[in-house]
Length: 515
Image (tube, rainbow, N blue to C red):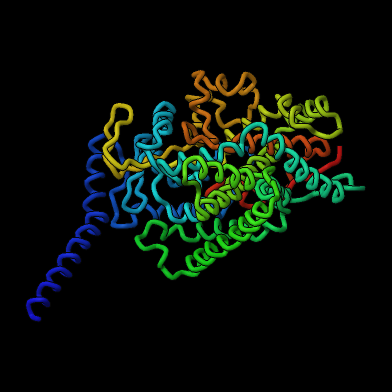
């Protein structure tokens, strides 16, 4: 027995020592080794701090920035929405890095290098982020073979023919919102209202109709949970990169985990309901979920394996978040920009009335709205929904003329590229839709607009729903401009503040008039 006890004790001690060494290596030796490599390569940044890195300073600066709006006279929002990144780059130069916990994150600002990173998704992968992954999921976070399979299954949902079918749901939702505004403004010379809640709800209803064939009310619980999750993430900035973060018993953390469970139950109910309808012989394929389930069945027939129930739930979560939050941001910033730049509001309205008059919109006519498209491109350049993409190296990987060791994260910030005067000219932070008059390719100084315009990402993983988003944004703005003119309310506070997307923190109070 004594011999066995010694053997057991030896094994336990060996395991503890090995585990302890891995922890020490993760929190100290590996970061210090990477820091040495970065400095040898000419990168500058703060010295590494055990476990937390720069997270405390980052969270403090974000909290301070969030507490106050910025002057509406400028679209130069970099220092406001990314205050810590701006601080580091100003202090150390463009060739700099920050610490996200024990992980160094290097800024990549050269469009050619960004293109290289995005074109090699297997070499430069998305680092695991439990909070992000539990909110979004699906194609956004899948890697390798899983991503390839999911993309193949989902692709049919976003082809031109299905987009035409889904246009009916988009148009119905936009019409409902405009009718609501017409009732609110009836008989008044002008009406002040915060348009942000209605636009946010609009995108939610569009997704409910086009993705799930249900009313907005049926999906209300999912939207409420998603919005609460985004607010909770900001409350947890101090602990996001701590080991075992999800077990830390803060009030926000507990609520976040509870919401993850409730969200899964709600989506499971919607999917089960649809699967039962299909099993009973109903041929439902005029929405994203129906198309997805049909495509998944075809994948199983042809290749033996498709998506699991958990996979379908993850893709539905992504439909809700990517399909509502990002597009609602795009529409509201368009209304704010057109409130500031009335001459472009007039031009867009004249074009819409020339194409459609005061009548109904149609899918084919949207492509004739050239001025509105220029405006939408300029808005999403200045206010991109995703302000930063992060990739990481799993092995030594070549980028440009460097060999990057495993464990280094790369920060690709569209907001930096979109506001760079070397690329877009001295007026890079000004609202000038005319720069897109000859398309995206010719919008920049260097004639490489496709590499420097990144609102939907790039490479093989470019956003699958970008045409859907553009259709919704065009339809919503065309319906609004047909019926109303608008300007900023004196109570408007300019505060584009990011968590995952870039919403107006203090809403969008506007003065609305019928036209």
